[in-house]
Image (cartoon, rainbow, N blue to C red; front, side):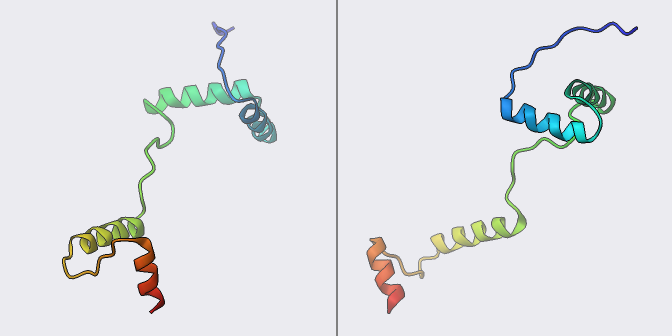
Length: 91
């Protein structure tokens, strides 16, 4: 028999219930799922999936660059107040 140990984790109860349901559909319990995760982590030398900060997509990056260009363009009409800009939109 393998040398095992107990491992306690604090987790949101709703997350736990949802995960138990998902893994139950796969025919395994949460303990087995966690063991699979840990073994796969050892196999790949880290997280077994990409962990990254959410990055803006290409379209969003292009829009941000366009906004920066517009902000630096001295020929672009500027408004002192929102009301002034809204009035110009209605004209």
